[in-house]
Length: 326
Length: 305
Image (tube, rainbow over all chains, first blue to last red):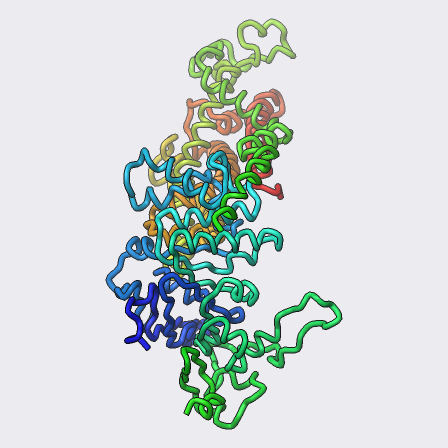
């Protein structure tokens, strides 16, 4: 698959694992928690990869690793083919920037919008300080804020406006990759589409690459070119968005798609067959980590972890696939 | 496609017209609506003015003794004294009003310098512990607990005995001892601030750790810091008075309100004003600082709790 690609993907993780040692209590020692367990993910340049999965599956830890905030225990992160191993935090920051979920906590309340948006320029000491103001005004205009708002404080703005400020701050250094961590889930429904359309437009105008982390499948379906489904620290299914949504291969993806709420109240809350229990990542299940909740669980699932099987650029990790693929 | 990015400009202008007041405007509004804050502020400013203008306001040198004119009565007992010694004289004939006026200097000096020393120590320890967590937090917590296990008063008296009693020793001892509340409060607030997304954004931007602590976190804990500072200032003033009253603090003939209480002890039943006057001064200063601190908390912390 790699040979087929002429350009290296904008962002690539190679078998990245992240293990935390969690204290079991006073004098009881520590146990390893595998927040990410051997994730290999590729985000091609100019595309949007959606990363979905329920809370606690390791999405945010993966985002931290990609942003250089958390060193992976093993494995390698590559930006456009260059390994991040020797990079300083500033080197990483120039290539990749985050947009966070909650625009109420992602902007420092004691700073003006101008100070927030120009901060990356000051930290990296880019260009002439006399041009910074003009750059901020230009960036605010690009994200659809009046330049007058530069002198406001975050508390004077609405959630949607604040998210636009956060986007301006992320993009002012013109990074190649933007990690959108639930960019709309803290916003009013009426504002969500505005922000999503803005992200879409910015991607086309500035040639950005997005990793879109979300548990809102509608958002992912709307924006993403490819989708990766994460469960308990592993990517269990990955493929083109239309294929994954139309023809999910992993039972977990099927359950996630069934769990989408419909606007019709008569249909009630959908049944996912997942049960309520998310396994404890300190003590993961044997074999396939999804088997205790899987509707199609077989004997082999309890003892042997499935291997990734791909066909037509659509990968899934499930014993059910063994028959089809061979 | 591009027009979507530009349409909000018109929205933005509408929103701009009904813009919320800026944080400064809100702060000013809350300040002038908070009576305990205003009352505290007025009394503190008054006492501060008296302390600063002491050489102009005081009718006499506070140290000048006149043994032939001892223990004269204040004006409400003896109208004759109104011009010369409005509040009478003490047991060695020093003008009581002048001593009270200069006493404000000592109290404020001790309060402010103790607060600065202990505030610096406590804030550095607390912010460090709160930001780094883990082992650093454990070590600093141990230091805080060690400090809390020591009785301030006993250690202060021991230090005064060891190093001799003077204004400097009192300030240093109190300053090196009263940082525990700063450390505890700063630690917990920094812990809350450190996990907020703007700190994460700063780190993802490539900011250095000292920059994040000083420029991102510190401005956000400043409100709570000033509240703790006022409480600790009142505390330091009271402790100085208590130490001086016991003879372990500021030494005679320096005009300190606590020391004046001590000197007036034996005349309690015959000249009660000798006790009542410095006591009232202390009471109003500490009350004002506490009112101010309470009001400041309501004014600075949003959604006033």
